[in-house]
Amino acid sequence: MNEISPLVSIITLTYNHEKYIEKCISSVSNQTYHNFEHIIIDDGSTDCTVDIINSFYKSENRIKYIRQKNAGLEGIGRNYNKALSLSNGKYIAILEGDDYWHVHKLRMQVEMMEREESVLCYGRAYTINDSDELLDWFPKESVFRDEGISHNMPTGKFLRLYLFKSVIPSPTIMIRLDVLRSIGGFVQPRYMRVVDYPTVLHLSLQGRFSYIDQPIAFYRVHLQQATLGNEIPFDSAGKYAAEFFSSLPEAMKAQLRISESNLIKNIEVRKALNEFHKGRILLLEGKFKLARKYFVKLLRHNIPEMKIRAIMGLLMSLFHYDLEWLARLVGKRCLK
Image 1: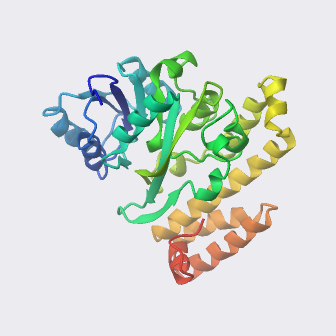
Image 2 (image 1 turned 180 degrees about the horizontal axis):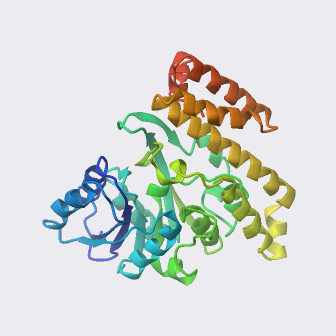
C-alpha cells in the first residue's frame, strides 16, 4: 500500500500523565504504519508530563506539541476541536495520554477503511489497570451477534445498540476527517465531560462503520481517569441519548424500533454501572472505606442485578479484597 496517502492525524490530550505518557507516545512512534502526524495537547500538566513529551518532541518531527493553560474537563471538546483544526490527515485517530496501541493498529485500520470506504473504524481493546495488568477486553462477541449493527448497515442501525450502551473503546476510534468536519467536529454537550460517545452518535447517521474483531488498543482504568474520577452524574450519557433520539426523523425512529421509555430507564442503569465501577476501582486501589460509599449508593437502585453487585462489593470492602480476587476465585479474569 502506498503510505504517502492517506495521512493519519492522531490526537492526544493529556493532563498529569507522567506515569503513562511515555508508553502512549512510544506506541505511536513504533507503529508499522508510518505516515502520520501526532498532535499532542498538554492541558496544563503540573507534573513531569511536559518533560517527557519534550524528550520525544525534540527527536520526532511528526509530533505537533501544544502546551496550554488548564481548561479542565469542561474544555475537552474545545481542545479536541483545536487539534482537529491543525489536522491534515484523511483520517483522525484518538489516543488519550494514559492509553496506548497495538503496534499494527494504524495499518489495520487504514487498510480496512480504504477497502470498505467507511466513515468510522473501531475494534476491541484490552482493559488494563494502573500497573499495566490485563483486566479484561471489550466489546465481547455477544454484543455483535448482528453484523448489520457492528457495521452500521443500513446507516443508523448501530444506534439500536449504541443508544443504550457505549461499546466502542475510545483508543480504537478512527474517523474520516471530512465526515467529522461535516458534523461540526467533536461534540461535547455542556453537561457531559466526554466527546467520544456523543460524536459517535452523530457519526452513526453518516455512513458505514468498520469493525476489527480483535484487540488493537489498551484502555486504562484507574480512579484518576477523567471520566471515572469526575463526580459528574453518569446518567448524562443516558440523558444525551434520549435527547438525540427525540431529535431523529420519525422515519428513523420507526426503523430503530426503540421506545423513549426504554431510553429513560437506561439512564438509571448507566448511573448504577458508573457507581459499581467506581467502587470496583477503589477496591483495586485499597481504598475500602471510600469504595463502600459507592456500593451503598448502588443498593438504592431498583435493579436486582445491581443490588447483587452492591452486596458483593460491600462484602469485599469489609474483608479488604477486590472484585478481581473474587473473579479469579470463580475462574474468571474479572467481574463485569
